[in-house]
Image 1 (cartoon, rainbow, N blue to C red):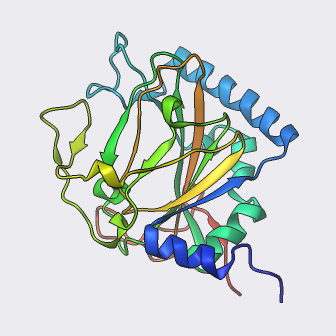
Image 2: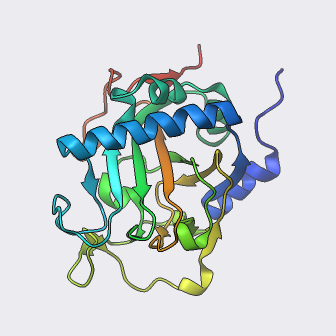
Length: 249
């Protein structure tokens, strides 16, 4: 029997805290290729208007002072990111956390430019997604060294154990907002370039503005189990948009 990708302590930590910092994964040559492809896709998106600015409540506003740029479904645009969905190193870890049957929910590239990178406000992913069962797992990968000051992921340990109400934001540029977060509990997950972390779809998380001279390029893959339902209450079908990435036969 092959050795599990995670120790039992790592698995227990994820289920207790709702996140797991794994650390470096990509080799230097892999990182170089993905950086070049990532930058090319964002250049194209800037020309065509295909990216959204999550740091502004009017995502398509061109004069926004802060930018947290998002490209959804990078895997449908670029073969290198499509291949990353099937990376056995990542799937072996996800299997330890989610089980042997793994589907793609979606992926997204999240870019905070130097100096003007905007915040992503505190939220639970499933506050937006409305998936059931609420057991999706995200792999968050960084293509740059990430520290608190340029937008490292911050999480509230244990917050995945219950959903939190998300209201329409009246006070911030977030689409939804939540109140009553004890920020003293927040933990920052700093990573090297090519590093990864995992978090549960109900883990409260946030990334701060990037006011440093260093950009922050991140890529997130969101995994689910077959039979997961979306906003309409219907199970998502296996197709090009939601491929089966691993199945127990």
